[in-house]
Image (tube, rainbow, N blue to C red; front, side, top):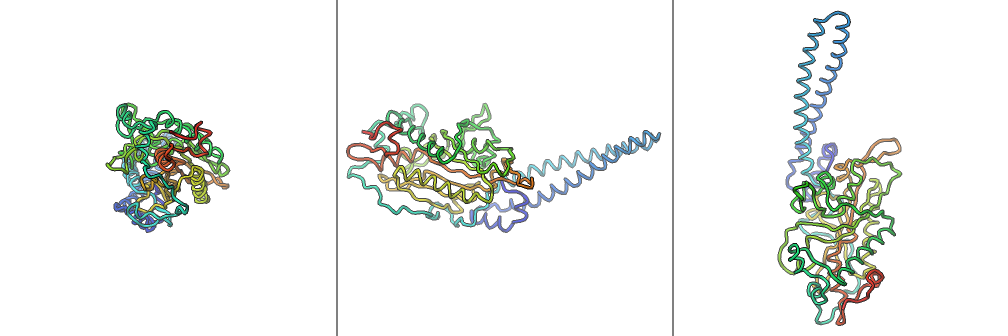
Length: 424
């Protein structure tokens, strides 16, 4: 959430950022400015009225002590009127505060200056291109959904029986491959200095609001009505919220956290090969990395996170490229996002497997996540997160790219986790 003071002081910058995002509801900018001025005016009136009440209360006591009961009672009548006025002012303040919060929650983050303009994923900028040879498959190669059935390692039909479409069942070597990837990703995060967490898989409304899932993405989240809880769409939500309502010291930076969780998303599906098999599912496993950082260092940290994700894909031997997302494809809370895509040789297309983002102070303002500088002044921290990595499309690419006529070769880095070097 943007600060009202930032919007007022940087109105043109905010409007330009919204233009890059193709965000049309710019009237919220003026609403924030007007409502914030009204809030300040009513606050000043409330403070003045409270001061009158405080001074009069002292004066009443002195009048009673000096035997001037009539004047004291007259003053008490004035105090009663001021208290009525104060109550009315507080009610007005509550209405304005709610309107102001609604307007602020409706505005997305201001894009970083490097974010390119554009409306769709076709306008995303290739930040780093794959410059090595692509996998060469044998003549009768198959897409991963056919390989999964052939080797009996992932059962989509059983998932439909147990739950519904988009809930795959991994079994045998497919389940062990899944567990191997999770262990590999977590071990690499631990080597890089991340503290590992196993967070809850459901969160309350405050947590979902804190990282920006609410009110922007409520339609994508599974909601447990009886308990007023949300199934998490990513470990980012509970892990980042560990530091909600926390005041840090500068010496606490950097804070590096990682967590593995299943993720649940009610994404509206379409039909066609691009959403078949593991290309789009409603439940999937993911390892997330989260940083809480000093504002002066967050963009260096973003580069560090990109290197970490690159290292995972390099070790797996998967062709990848990095995209800098354009304004129209940028997430609501992000100032700058890089997407990683791996090449699916059997499908002949790139599949997104990670997003790495800097939210600057957008999340921390909602979270009330601050730090004290050396002069004991409080500032908002920066938050960042990235997938390292999301498993479904990684598994899809591994199955497709490493298929041979004798079976599917397991990358060497995973073999100590799987206990086997081939699926056949």
